[in-house]
Image: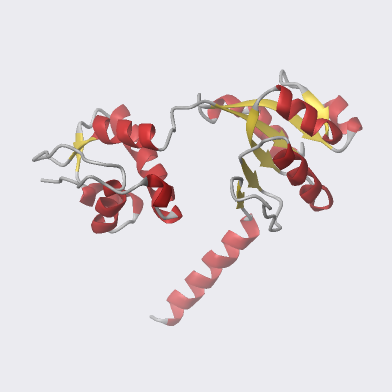
Length: 220
C-alpha cells in the first residue's frame, strides 16, 4: 500500500525532485501505453535507477494520492504530475543554429511531443538558410527578438557556433524565452532567475562515462 501525505509547496521543491518527477511522468506515459494500471514505487525506482524511498519522497511534494493495494494508480499519478507541474501547457520551441544537428531537429520536430512544437529556426549564415529545405520558417539571427516575441516562443534549443551562442542566448532571454537547452559544448548562464538553462555536452558525458568505467575496472 502506498499513500502520500498532503505534500509541500512545489515552489519550494528541490530542483532534483522536479527533474525526477518529470522522468517519472515519462515512464508513466510508457506504462499507460502498455496498459499498466498500477505501479509501485519499487518498480518506478528500478526502471529509473532511483531508490524507492526517493520516489515516494518526490511524489509526496505533489499532494495526496488515494491508497491502493497495488501501488500508485498510473493514470492518477501521471495526471497529478501533469497538473501540478503544468506539463499539459503547449510550448512553442525554436532552434538556433542550423548545422546538421539543428537541421535534424527541424526535420524531426514532430517527434518531440505534441506539447513542444518547433515554430522557427535561426542561423547566422544567410547562405545556409537559403540551402535548407524545410516547411518551417527560417530567419537570420538578428531577427530572434522579433520572431520569438511574435510567435510566442517560450523554449529554445541552441546548437549555434560558440562565437554566437552568448549573443543568441541574450536575445532569446530578452525576447521572453523561459528555458534554453544548449548543445554548444560551453557553459552559458542566465542573468535572470526565472529563465532556466541546461548545458549539454556529448564530450562531457563521454568523459564522465570513461572515468566511471576506468575507476570501476581498477576496483576489480
